[in-house]
Image (cartoon, rainbow, N blue to C red; front, side, top):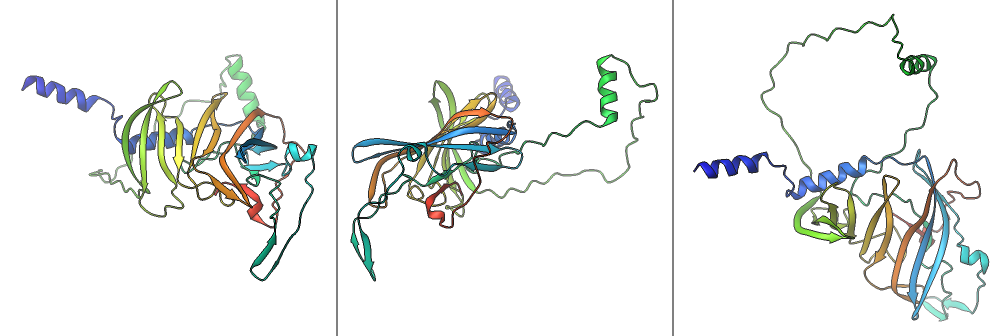
Length: 304
């Protein structure tokens, strides 16, 4: 009995790392605690395998972490080097279409993608806009630097406790979007990670997470699988796997990989992926990029 009591006390004192809801909550806290540089420049690389050949398009992009604004060049580097020229004939009578459909200039659409989209794990925090110090703050910083306290400042006494009602209970209300279970612990790029399985309790098109891998030491999201991806285009209705990478102490999207083939304007992509590359902090956003949105959203690759 004594051994059983000691074992129970030890288990009660140990941190709860096997509760899947707590692991998911810790992953959310980790995501929402990130701090990003004010302005970032990067390249979105779209890769597809079509007709037995690997193809790629590179798009210059930038992100304003102060406002969450994305700017990008809707024309890929490859199209700039070799401008697209329309070929063939495509016309129709009522519902009858005659001729070969023009292949897309952008494999999945022009990517309007941020490097730190949250996929529903948590809300991506914005970077506070730096404010110039006030004269009083400058004086305080100088005094702190030279260890010269202001003689006019006296410590304020601690406020007396305010009498009131005694707290008799604490009530927590939870409105869960997922039924979360712990599958086990898997190896993700050489590090152990909790493998969570998520089943949406409502709105499956909105709550798209199905699997999530969370670092056992830091609770950083390492990998996920979602049932749906992107707001439009051929990749919308197929599952995707997403991996994350750490750059200079902050977490970013590394690569999104389609887990099923897809069709787009007469083409069949047996493989497709979107990756964030050449991520670099900059002092200000490039002037030749814009947040222009075309009239037809079907030509854009955007997260919902």
